[in-house]
Image (cartoon, rainbow, N blue to C red; front, side):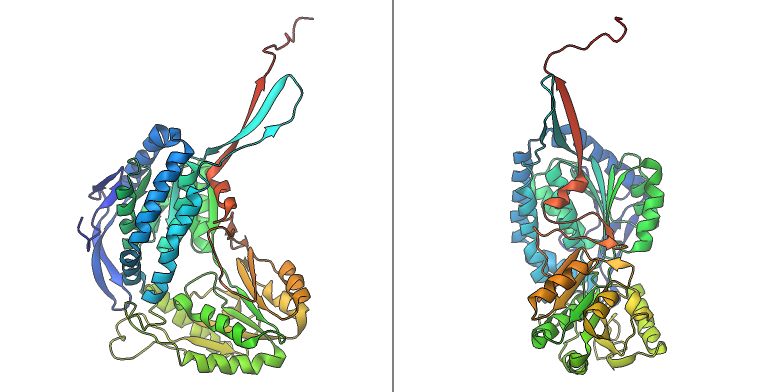
Length: 492
């Protein structure tokens, strides 16, 4: 397997040819053309990956003490840190993310693995007070074989958030990355191989969702599915996996409110609001795509969005000067453009952007202008539905109560942000917002130690932090008699 090709699957510690998948080109979204060959697995490949993961779980991995798992994870994390540039380049080629963003993002991932390594030997239980005749205690044991399904917008970050806690907990993994962006996950597999993980502990099988993904979800020997993606797919996964009663954790969509009160430091709020509208080309469920602005400063914010959009450098992902690359694939490009049309049809005012980028050298790629709508009502589709493109909806409000009502008025509850100079307001509003993570006078501050996940339709469970281990562990209760006696119930 050469550096520029990813035409083998990683199963059972070996690089193997797909049995019933094949090799096809992975599309560079900045050109619309294939940039590398990638192996895609099918049902038979998922079967052998699950078998390899099961054998590893029942073999050396399950019996390995936590400190040894931690040592392997640390070795892997150090290798990861040494290959940040290579990994960032692959991810930017595969999903179009600006290289300056990829370098920053991928540059932090090693710390996630180090964080989870630090927990691998601390999976302790508790003693349960009983009477003197028994000693009762709990222990935390790994859930088993985990199928991880990662998204196309941040495949390496999503892998870190899942593989880190799964491996620290003592689970084994079959990783199926999104079919649109598979290459970086196969690059990741090389580092697991180099780090010396036992064969079968980590397996990487790119494949299509309806075939490889569906079979992984339905497989009776997979004990848990960890999925990041959109809600409709999560519902299908639940139905497909229901017959086997496996465990699930979901990190799903968002329509995050980013609230700017009139007493805020508006310049700082604008830095965050415009960044979170167009970072990653708008392709993140944590971005503040609904910008709620208190009316006294609303016109100022609208004008600043217009002005700052002109400073966003849209260009080729590997150009260090580029601020914003293309949409990750053709289907997402079409979806974003369709929602821009919906915004116009609903009567919102197009402040900036609103179409494809037609500059020389970019016409063949999936580039969209940074876009913002003003005069948006909370009930408009562009304010209710996740677009996943660089489209901000600027919504005016009057006072705390209206801001909270608008913020909570969607099915989603992943993240939220608010800007205010009033510490009491900060506490009041943050406490009432229905979201798994709320930022005050900052935005998108996410680290390995801070639990991340959604309420309502935004997911089940938490990633990062100590809480991330919970969905990869089962609690086992053991009760031991201290007397060795058990009365005969039929003696009298």
